[in-house]
Length: 308
Ligand code: PPE
Image: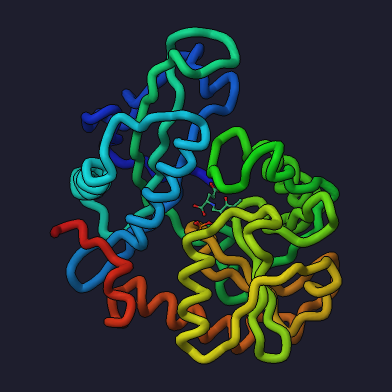
């Protein structure tokens, strides 16, 4: 997806012109995947742009960093200010936000411990993730032959750059096979998630999603959607799912910061439910987007206003 360029990127404490946000080719992260990052969205509200679940995203970023012994040289409070400042400097009403902390230029070799931790925050407008009409029409997915890496190979609790190589294999395989997205099973054959989204099924009015212990990322959208679903009166459970559970469900959908709530209309060429966005998915989307706009006081805490 082409990036819509804006003016400034925050880099190690300063706002620099977009094209000057550069790194050295011998940066550790480029060679060994030693970066941790987040994808966050800011939504347009009546009180100006508001960042969705900023604290939860930063908490996960600092946890990811600690798993890799990476000390982020800014406090969370400083990062909150930096995110707000970057959005303001670019005059955006809504945007995607990509903070990253990575091992920079210094020594060469696998151990990152002597290398500096560089931090940047980029923001830009980013529309629907899985295609123009995805939120209404739904997407077509394929169960990937590539498995989700094991917890003891690459911990799914860390949203680390290197971990996305597996996602790349699944995504490219899906696209080249004519699908929109790939779904990865874990080593035991249970469903984990898409290349960049968590997955849910709706079956007989119950909403089911794989447990994070089975290899999926603990998605911030996943947990927001679980809360919203329970508040709407749906039972929500975390349980093992096998691929045929996706084939036979009434509805299947993805969640993610970029993907938001994207219906899945086909899995491995089998039509899911009625073959279009189902009523439960629609009601979750409506409640979710009302919350992101600041229209639901129950979820007011989930928004950080850029002007505050
Ligand atoms: N699983 C994976 C593998 C993943 O990358 C994401 C986010 C999620 C689940 C959902 O997590 P959350 O955003 O906290 O609800 N993927 C980010 C990056 C996508 C990309 O293409 O880059 C995102 O959605 O921002």
